[in-house]
Length: 261
Image 1 (cartoon, rainbow, N blue to C red):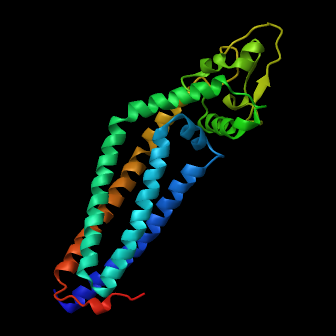
Image 2 (image 1 turned 45 degrees about the vertical axis):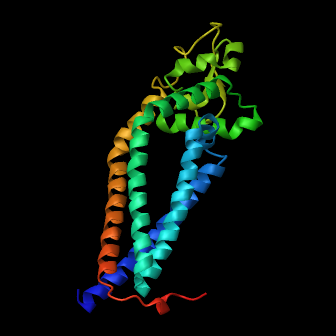
């Protein structure tokens, strides 16, 4: 390889790893946010399933390793250090294989995650009480999901028939977030009726359950999700090819190029 091509490969690999470093910081921050979030529906998911906590720890680990790899790649590329480039290639290959393993795990564990989410939402609906300050953030997060997806309950409005407060009120109230007619998206709304005991069939709420809404959202955005995954995999493969090419064409080691602390 000519010296010109070697320089182009070297600096292109440096820019690639700079972007990789930024990507690692984003992944690390996202994992930390999931782990410590207490204001969105993610906090409810964490309390019901260890899978989301494990996922957060995995994101933090991947982000930290990606940052380290970005540093190794930048130093190895600029200073033409074959040892660092070799370590960089090995780490990148391991992450690529780990992503494939994670994708297969998610695919084969999707029924378990679905069941855990269903149980969590059913318990949340059963104990829903807008006056409970301890669970207010989790309940408002679920109200937000119902409002945004135009859905009610997990399987449907009948899930709210198990709510303790609605039972005591003979189902003359209904969750405000289940209806598009209410500007106030939290708590329960009371129906004007003289018929005594009512039920979910009488409520002015959406008939679709949120499980269908979530699955519909995933189907609609599956192309974007797959595109991002394929793009990341392609970038990783490009990084491995560049590091191999540069490492192969560095003819002599010069450890005086290693930055000294």
